[in-house]
Image (cartoon, rainbow, N blue to C red; front, side, top):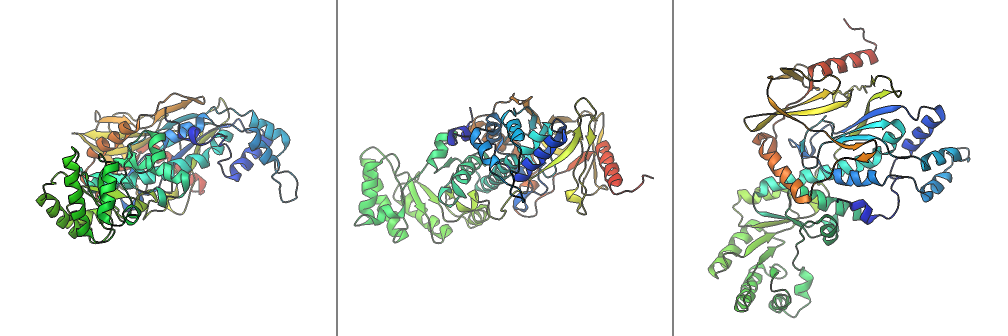
Length: 492
């Protein structure tokens, strides 16, 4: 079972929330509205990296977090010490007892990890007591935002790398221990073949790979001696970093040690280039290796790589078989955050009908979508052709019309009988898990198979095609009506 947080942390994570979630919870408790039911949607407004898609990631961590959600005595002792502006306790003791007895009971629906997703689509839908739904907001956004960002970056790198190996090298440059571990998971999901982070390999059961650093070569009297010592120690893992002093001399030394390896029944796995003109050096190194009979020995390149540099290396005809990608991948270089949000879309008193909510803004992209929403993905002739957001209490019937939420004049008609899949699946019911996360390798394959079914235009690095995502016509009409009411505009 995927339990990364349980393995790393031995205590409650209930305080992984913003203070205003707790002050609002206190306000509901004081007002007697803490049992009011709410629906919240987690979504993002813009594709990351100026691309055409994102990869949903983080659901496994989210499930683990919710499975162990509770306020422990240590949490409550800390909250009891918080004071307001008058120096008096911020929270009453009775409220802290309420938190101590709080049992998670929400329904959660989510889009499975590894699914291709787009702006405005609810990735996670939370339904249940409003206090609970609010308190978990910060953690849900923290988990889903970061991991979706990194998985998307990894998928972009995988697309340009093709069938060549990609290894995540980012531990030392990641944003802290949590950032490093989450990035290793998300990178593998997005398309990396392995990580150099051994703890991530243990926690997530993903492959680990690594060779040696420049310090290894520098710690011996000569580079040749260092390669020879490494080969004797690890004859089944002999991939040498050749640019400590002189790259071509390093390649020659690797070849010499490779011949000794063959005499003992092993082989030269390859060489690694970590500086200089990677395109030129790889081409020349390939010639040297091939001339010496090491046609199967690979060339691994690293050094601040990302999808754009790898794409450039491809265009230059670089003879690179594998890429080590670190800083740019695990930090989401080019996009510091996904920008996902968590918005209230419906509220009711227990047993009553839902009252749909909409947040309005001067910016069209920030007007929320009301309702208990689901996402329906349509497919024709093996290719995905559009995603429609609809309300579960207004089920689409027959031929459907979906309206672009950013431009009501842009519409797409989906004919009756078109194949579809509803993306949000039950994850929790009444606070109990009803969904089992898939193994990492299975999620990774899901990413690959998903991307294969989309038009190549959405996978471009630059000027990506805009995939059709729209609101079901009736839902769009309801949204428009609620916006007009909120602005005091009478319907005509």
